[in-house]
Image (cartoon, rainbow, N blue to C red):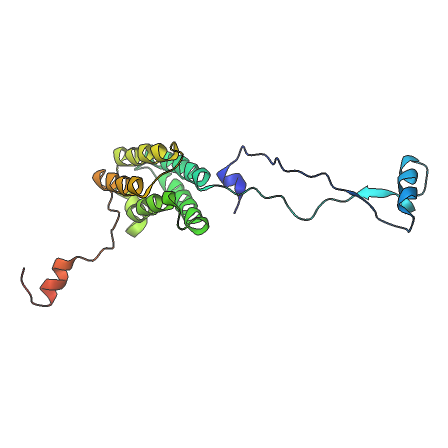
Length: 186
């Protein structure tokens, strides 16, 4: 996961200064420090600061990833109906997949995946209007502003997406069609 993609202004705060190590030669620890102070001594016994090979990683929270989704969704809503919208849709799709991959059972993920199904099943993102997409932006920004969301909030959010005109279950089974195929009548 590329953290810069989700939090471009985030800086590392857990930096640890590397410890000095004697790189070449064999000398007692006390002598290495004394030799270090003398710049004219041979480099045979000098100490060097070795960089740690283990990176310090800050994990992006579901809220941070959802904020990145919100940015792409806003760009998609502003460019709806234009060719550049495909670029924002692709970026939105990738970030939505990242959220699902890293936080599959998070409440934010459930709402985002309902929107994902509505937008990307058979490329339906092309058919949605600026008003619908901006409504989804408002809904997701209201979710992000909350500290914690409950299962009731998730259900209400998915119903709100449905009310905006998003088909959050585009691949659902129509039971009326199944009954007609079996020759049964309602």
